[in-house]
Length: 291
Image 1 (cartoon, one colour):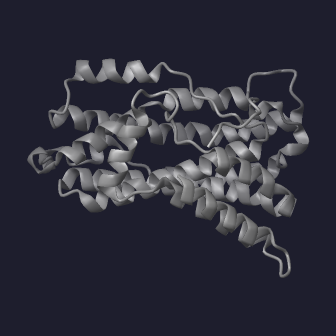
Image 2: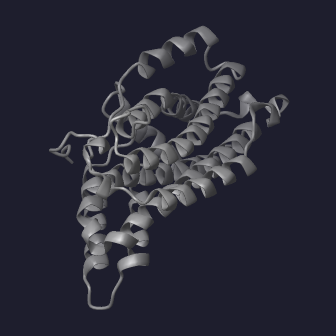
């Protein structure tokens, strides 16, 4: 699929494109509270349970791949802080209030992702996949590359992240089913649960927009699905070959995550006689067939 023609960020929108601050507060507060209740640390993991001899080459390749993806959290966070700035005195109060609430979620989310990156990096070192020096150099090479999203409307950025979080959750679940190394199996379960929480937040957030805007929101969601790329797809050298090998070894297909958008829309605008959901479902199936 080709990239979308527009190249602005979410900050190009107007305050009318944002949810009321009180509604955003409630969505974020629920997500942040859940994050605190389900937090874990690297010290909670039983590092003595490592059994690197039980790792296959496919396992090792997948671990290396997902470490790059998770370690790019500074780039992801930088993009969202630029798109939803919280240090701009000229902003309208409504916009700042919305961004400020979203910032609360971003901080909690970034903490989760940084923990994922740290756990995977230590796993590589402790299992002998790479030395600390080699790994830091490799991660820095990819980490310094800029991450951006091409969407102008906030709900499109949120829809992208909804799909990405669901796709990542699905991958960790599928990968977990294929591994026999006990520590990695436990770690992947933790990662999947965190990604499921992130997905739940974005489902509630995008759902609030769809509930407000109804069928009028669907063209923007279709644009995201049509142009979706997993993080690093356009910046990491050899990404597509590597990702396909990893997907084949785990029976994983990220386009399965598109179905979550159809289910979300169906929950709010599936009115008898209205073709909106059926058309979106057909569109998603057509996209999945050509990938």
